[in-house]
Image 1 (tube, rainbow, N blue to C red):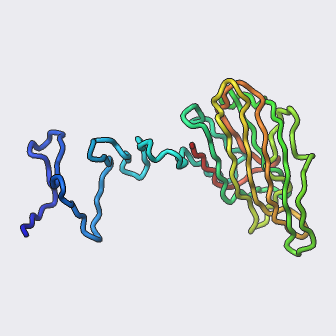
Image 2: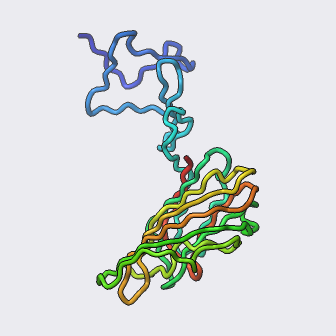
Image 3: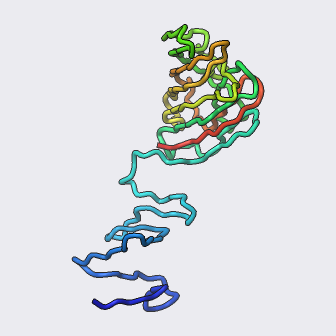
Amino acid sequence: MSRVYSDTVLPEDSGVSQDLTLGTTGDTVQVTSGATLKVNTLKDAGGNTIFTSNGSGVLSSINSAFAGAPTLLTTNTVSDGASSAFTSLIDSTYKVYIFKFYDVSPATDSVYFQFNVSADGGNNYNIDKTTTYFLARHQENDSQASLAYQSAEDLDRSVAAQRLAFSLANYADGGLAGELYIFNPSNTVFVKHFHSTFNYMFSNASPHTMNVFIGGYFATANAINTVSFAMSSGNFDGVIKMYGL
């Protein structure tokens, strides 16, 4: 078997962009175990792009055959910030926008973590919301466990921020994690639905684990293009990622 040793293999006309074929029909082109094949664009035999990378691990031009997997759009890392707003990339590109929350921790004890939406880039947060809110709880000392509807936390055609968690503890080992789904925010005919699930450490003499479920809709025919998160008082730390689906 013949072998060719080379650091670089180029098309015949160097400097001219053209295809370089390895093997022919029926052949197997093998990348030896332990070797690395580096490409920024991967295509199939028909020349259809499977994906394109910018060379730093960020993918674009992803083939529609991969549809159904969430696409990470942006990440907001908050360090002692008063709020975190997503003011771009919320458009008709995706039907579902998913926000995931990691280690959200308030600077002030026993505060609310909440969110609101805007149809004008964050200039006004004045969209009516009708929502429902229930939770499960369990104290660390096992003295209380319950599942209950929380009428004090839901909204009835209100423009107020929706509370995602209440009495959030700022203990050193506390914090909040969860996810929020907003459906078809760019639609200009129907109301926009959302639901969320969060788990966090409740501020109490005997700390709780709180699992909160919220659902509702934004009563507007305008396209929603901004989503903002904040504590009811004080700053917070945490990571929030926005995905499109």
